[in-house]
Image (cartoon, rainbow, N blue to C red; front, side):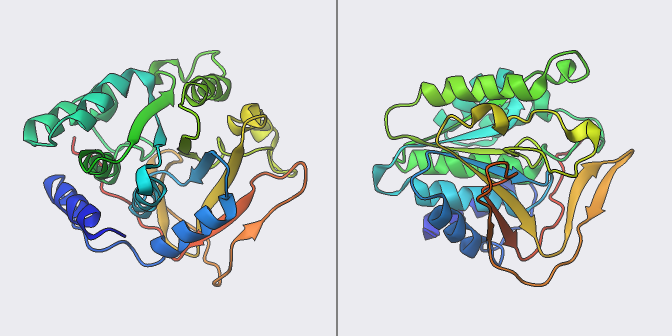
Length: 274
């Protein structure tokens, strides 16, 4: 990993009030595994547990590696598309206190308590800052949201279908040869639901609408740790502990993911301030 990138990320995390060291143990290895297995696929969908400290570091690592040698890379985040103008402004800014405040006070980031699914964290803000630092160094990187408005979540809008439509439009608008990484919840990243999934999870997922594209779906798991989830109430959720294992690739036509990768550990990130 380029030393300047992680120095920039360290500064960003200090600004956002989160302690930071070098990339978490295993992040480098997992990034290498994903890049090796995804090969030439231009649409790499990362299915995560929301609200962790390690996944934003993994994504920052992948964006840095993929964007070397002037390669163009874009990142899709599970944020409403109404946030895209603010994201673009921040990437063009110098990242100073005023720019950070302008980003953090956008509607998506303004939460009054911890009752959200973990997508709003200082770790995610630091990921965006890492992309700004890459761009300032001349890298061809960008970031955009693809989600619907939060107010529409409980409506009759098919959220997965709408997100897939937005991603398809963004992907099709990319210059030739541009790679796109997409960070999303692990259910949205499924190519097909699990065979033994309960009825409420048998719906079409976001990734299932995009299988005609050069898509590679990655389930980002961990051997141990916690994530943040909303199971009434929202709280830290302990993950099942597993022995060390290599990535598990799937090849069946009805596979849920193309590969499962395993970080050594996940921990709950730092939620944004009230």
